[in-house]
Length: 338
Image 1 (tube, rainbow, N blue to C red):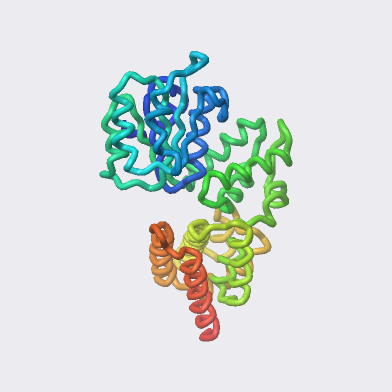
Image 2: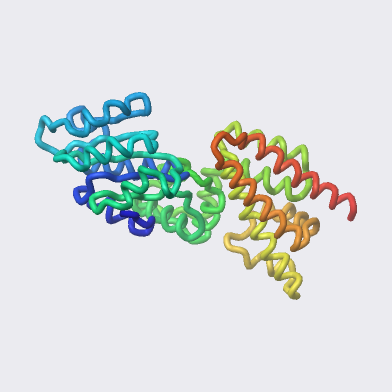
């Protein structure tokens, strides 16, 4: 059965209803989070040697043995398979057609829509296929707010908007930032914008932000330094693409409003979250250098860059360096012409 991300609760909250759960997609952090949740709900922990069998790519050949083994303590067993591929489709199908009772949880990366493993999970009523892709916009805001609520921590709307704009795409990275902020706040405290900036202002996401702003205003040296700092802190090129697309979108919104007669100051004040005061001059310089058609074309090129980074074997770091370098060079050339 194919499960929409909005309906994933029916899988996570009722693991006893399924024999096989396939978690696949681009967000490895979200895949691991869902898998861990399922395993913990069934077995009570992630490392019970009697009820949890964890298989990596090197031990996939033990799948049928583990999936048909009996539980020594009477509880349901879980076979947790990582790095799943279509080669597992046959063994999984054979086990599902048998009399075993173990829950099979398979983590996989991006799988083709017509792939054997996805087809198996989507066609059987006792199986679930859950696509795990990076959240953005309102979906990410809702997830972040829920994570804070689980820790009895509040957050203002302004702080939430700014935080979401800084977070990367991977769920593991998002959860790490939430854990850090929740620890800083403590239970029953509401985080405001200053709190959030104090906690993550020196993180890799802030370095991404710096590299994007500097590229759009034509500072080639500053762009290179900020990007290398972000990459050394663990940032990934897809996260850079997401931040860049968000910045371009905000520039286009202000640019369009100004061309319709709204003052630049009023147009910038209308942005939510607002432009960080330390970035306002950089934002204004970019507004002067990029026309609306140029921003639209750059958005299209950045989407293509993000897609290229997701291709198997892509030299994503090299692509990222080149993309920001070209943007900075274009902005610098536009500045010289002014």
